[in-house]
Length: 132
Image (tube, rainbow, N blue to C red; front, side, top):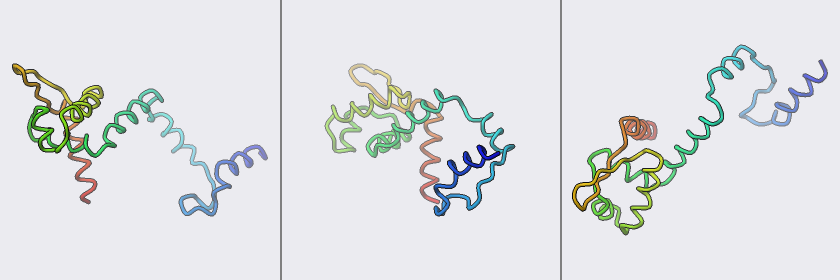
């Protein structure tokens, strides 16, 4: 039993003065077991973390919001963002590799749009969250 107490102190005891921690450490085994069952495997969680990293750049967010309204070519995006076309292209490459945007060629022009409704939902919910 002493080993369990030591383990609890290692996990909880060092932070007892912290407002973010419980004053008394008690493991709710039913809750812990449920959490262990529903949490995706590490590979999927890393993929989700990598996806959200793509949302961590102001310019990429702005590009995705513009593409949520209408498909646009690099020339249009460059003009609105007041950035060079190569700089915008680099952002689009990151977004495309993450399957957040897609492209279609029309003659000499390449038009970009959001990849699917999931991306639209993420963008809309992000805005809704910050406006609360």
